[in-house]
Length: 532
Image 1 (cartoon, rainbow, N blue to C red):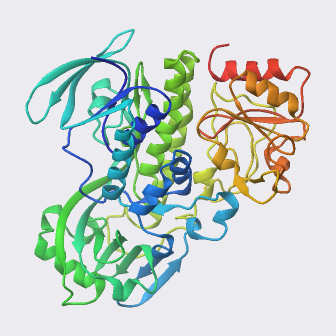
Image 2: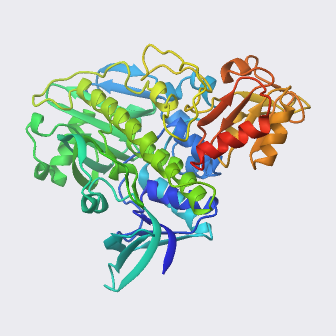
Image 3: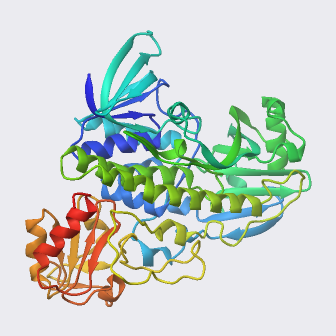
C-alpha cells in the first residue's frame, strides 16, 4: 500500500490533520493503537484561535454542541473549599467583552473525550482520509522517496507494510517515533506530579451561581482543582504537586479519593462516585527539531507543557494547520521542499515560547515547589491574548516588507491587530454592497491564499485571479465597506494589498500599488512556496 501521508496517533492533533489533508485534496491514513477515541477528559479548553480554525473548517457548531455553553464557564474561582470562603474570582480574557474586538469566535470548553468523537466523525466523512484504530506502527525506515512502515493490528496481530511519502507523528508525549529518530527534548522534564480523579458528584449547589471552568481549592491542608466537564455531575478533580502534599499516586484509592473530594468541597457526607484515577507528571520541554527528513513531529510529540493555561492541545492543532497546507502544496507540485522546512522554523520557536510561559504559570501557582503553600496565579494566567493571537513567524514562507513589528509592552498579554508579515491576519468587519449584512475577515481566510485590497486595488484583483488567489476587494466589486480604519490595521493605502496564507498568517504585503502587480504577486507566491 502506498499513501501520500501517514498520520501516527488518533488524538485531537492527528484527527485534525486527517480532516485538513482531506479538505486540501490529499489522501492520508491515520493509525491509532488504542481501540477508539479518548475515554478520559484530559484537555478541555479550546482557545479562540483554535476555534477560529474549527470555524473556518466548518466544525465549530459540532464542537460547541459537544462542549459547554459560554454561560457555564464565565469565571475562574479560588476558594478555601468549594462550599467555604471564596478567595478570588477572575473573568478569563476569552470570556470578556474585549474578546469580541479581536475575534468574532469565542473560546470553548469541550473535554477531550467529547471532542475527539466530533473530530473522528468529521475525518471519517471525508473520502480521502482513512482511519484505523487498533493499529500500531512498530517500525519505519526512511528512504529518499518515502517512509516504509510496518503496521500491526493490535487485536489479530496481523502485520502490513506500507509506504508513505510523508509521516506526521502525533503520537503523544511518549512519542515512539521521536524516540526512534533520536530527537532530543530541550527543557525541564518531570517538574511536578499530579493525579486526575474523574468523579460523579452533583456540585451545582456550590457552582451554579458562579459558573467556572476551574475552581482552585487552596487551604493549609489541600491544594486541588475542580475542573468543569458537564457543569452538573461529571467533574475532574485534580490534586497537584503530590510529593509536596505528602501523597503518592498509589494513595489514590477510590476511598481515599472520595475523602479528599469531600474535604475539598467542604461537605463530609457528599455522595461521590469515582469513575477513574489517572496519575501523571508534568514536563516543560520541546523537541530540538520538528522535522527529520520526511517525518514531522506535531502536538505533544513535539512539545510537552504544563496544563496551566491550557495551551497543549491548542498548540498541537495549530501545528498541523501550519503543516498540512504546506504538505499539500508540495504533494500537488506547487511548492518545493524548502517550504516544508518552514514548519520547523515557524512552529518550533513558538512551541518553545508557549512552553516557557506555561511553566511560568505553574511556578507562579506553586506547582513546582516541594513544600505545601497556598497562592493564586500571576496576572498573565488566562489573560494571554498576546500569545494566542500575536504569534509571529520568521521563515522563508514570510516575505518581510521592511517595516517594524507592532510594539507591545508584554507579549504574553498584549495584542495589537496588525497585518505585519508573519502574524495572524487581523479580524475586521466587512459589509456587503447592500450594507445590511456583515462578515468577518476571519470568515474569508483558512482555505487557500487570499489577497485583501482597497478600492483602488483593481490591478491586484486581476493579478490574484491569475495566480489562483482569492481576491477580497473592499470598496469596489466586492465588499462595500469595512470597519473604519481597517486599512490602518492592515497597514496599506487604498491601492495596497495583503496576501494571507491558508493558515491565516500574512505572507506578504505591499503598502501601495506597484508598477507591475502581476509580476510582484507571482514573485511573492513563488518565494513563499520555495520555488524561486
